[in-house]
Length: 326
Image (cartoon, rainbow, N blue to C red; front, top):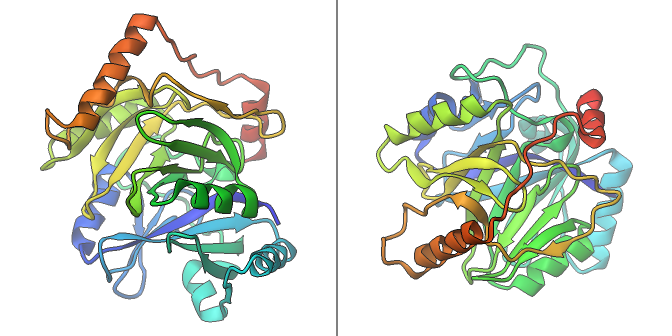
């Protein structure tokens, strides 16, 4: 019943024209014909990875999690139902809309909609990026990751870890709880911020070359309030990235160089350096905001301590096996 990757995400938004420009001109995704009032975007050989619904409040609509087979999907549905979680078995209409063979849906304790599916449809025509980029790091690692604000850390932790089987990669407790989960070699496909709120904090897409990120940073700086977090590097997954404001008032992390973990041998641990080794100044917050000041102080302490994250190692055995599997 194992979930293997983040297959797609959906966003509720009425800002379709703004999302078109954002997804293609900045992120480099390919817009495809949705045949209706939705925005559909490709990142690779999948028919779609990002779905903008064209309706509802500006927020995350759903996360689509992939399993290997119909049998795994049935096993997941049974486990959820046995735990008292309501599961909806969807028919051909929604499956066709998502370009998958079968899917179910259910909600986490905060009311976030999750879809689990098998049999993703592969496009016949090659991916054509919206602007010149080297491409996105997807394949068996999935679309990227999603980070949610959560109201009840323990309830969400138990749901994703104990019921869905997500594995904790690492976690931090200061200045607020942060938990990161992997379902494959990507350092995290899901994470949660114990902010006491609900809703999406950001989703992340990873690029194949650092210059893609740097050029995206230049493009984002030309947009009104285009930079939410300055260019920086995370201390846990080692990704170099920036965060940009979306048309729906949350963030997208645009990054390169994250470490790939070996799920068979990885052991979770607590991090104490703070989220970032350097950079990632929270420009969306006022200068005197307590969180912005605390994060800056933690980075300065990390610099005084001489903490260094290792550089990407493209020739490591585990990463080689992922690449060969694509």
